[in-house]
Image 1 (cartoon, rainbow, N blue to C red):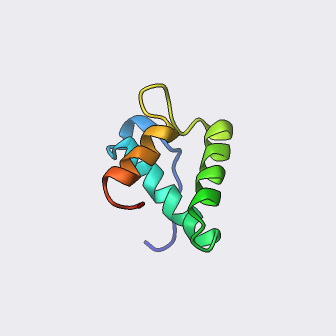
Image 2 (image 1 turned 90 degrees about the horizontal axis):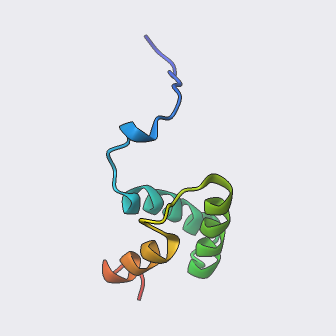
Length: 74
């Protein structure tokens, strides 16, 4: 069988951490913003407002702190 199989996204089946899920999006945004971290974070905040990517337990500010802590940002 060849081709794509599309299924509905079920967040409860996603075993990645909130950091890992946001990192995937952030890295894509970094590419589209030609490496502009501030612009990528602004876009991520806008996407979060529209699609509720985060919750009260893990916010974009938490993600940004994790990026600094893990050495992705200086």
